Amino acid sequence: MTWQWSRTEQTQRGLLDAARDVFTERGYADSSIADIVERASSSVGSLYHHFGGKAELFIALWEQHQAAHEEAAERAVAAARASGVTDPAGLFDAGARAFMTGSWERRGLALLFSSGDVPPGWEALRRRRTREWIGQNDSLLRLTDRPEDRVYASILTSLIGEGAREVAAASSPAESGAIIDAVCEYARRLMHGGPWHPA
Image (cartoon, rainbow, N blue to C red; front, side, top):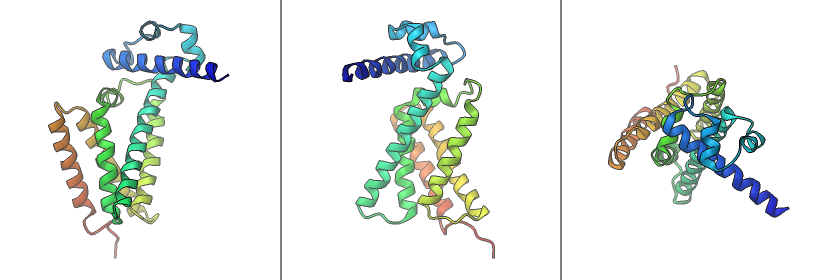
């Protein structure tokens, strides 16, 4: 049974790796299932069995990419806490840097997902994940559920998301590092004094 599960996992990994390569080389619309299974040395039947189709493969890659972002940010925040950082702004900075660094490390996928060349229905999934991310930042920054605090968390989250896209498009590690530093400085300025509360 363990051997069978290992083989299944290996097949899925091969299809995902092939899909990543084909999608990032040709874009989603211009990639075919035939291209992917040929690259994976697999079969059309296997692809449909494990993923259901091309759109599902795209979404699986995106979910994997997002999970890697979230895990890196969580590790960075945990490491900052372990080193004595308690200020929410310092913890946010650690998580944001790890998140954006992931966009450089997986820049081919980051550029693919921001290209607009996506399957139907993907934008709704992306919006839902963004709302979840805003909620996580809301908790990290210890905000209330006031509308102005939600807007504050949304602005900071959007800043990191846009920064991550710029990082992916950078021409070198040095340029990506400069972008990350700039985005974190803009975030620090926005966080100076905390969120706005009307009198």
